[in-house]
Image (tube, rainbow, N blue to C red):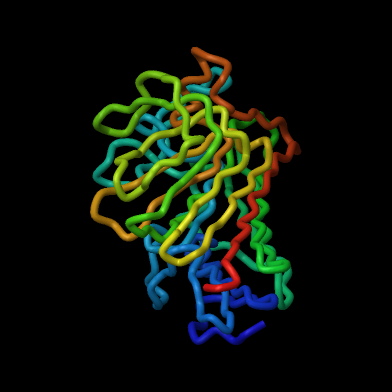
Length: 299
């Protein structure tokens, strides 16, 4: 384990791989890179230094107990109406859950792995819960395991996911097996489910997207021809949705494996394909994502 120059961040290492994590800043990853004789390469967009880091500037942050947006921050669950606190002003919709806005605490740590948790008191959700995040390096790959456990005495809705930011180059391509795509309105809320196919690849630099894809088969590949490098994202079957975000004029794009569609807690009243989980008291929901990089020997 290399010592981190920033005391707010924990640095892990295994062979050529290095990981930086900021527990107090949303439990987010601030860097995942390789150091090799041919030079270093960042597999996720590195975060700027400093203790005032926001998750939107990070390399990756956890999504718990839901991903993406809930319309107006309101929903009805188990016969009760819930109004969540605004967390993404000036947008009217709450987004990405609680975990990315709260400090996480260290449960365990060694040179190549780190376990974090936080406990939510249920004041802004139907029940209190405990979230856990385990990050580990092995043979150059990064595995992130997420879990949420209902610690209350009533049922609660739940979802999980990761929000990684990948470096964007003119020639990079994203390839994934999906079945459908939610069209969205001007506020990025879902309007209509359409057929979709990313198996032929899409250019993040040339294709504007901020959409959730359904039927994600758990494998996406990112190719950077300029760097003679690629990364395979492998997600558990529970993460059967993929959010792709390619904002114009930015040096990054996002491919987010998640367990449910946008606004699932509201759409679940109308349809059965949202991916929303309902956890009974004491029940746990967990899923993992693996980032497997590759570089050509000549690079």
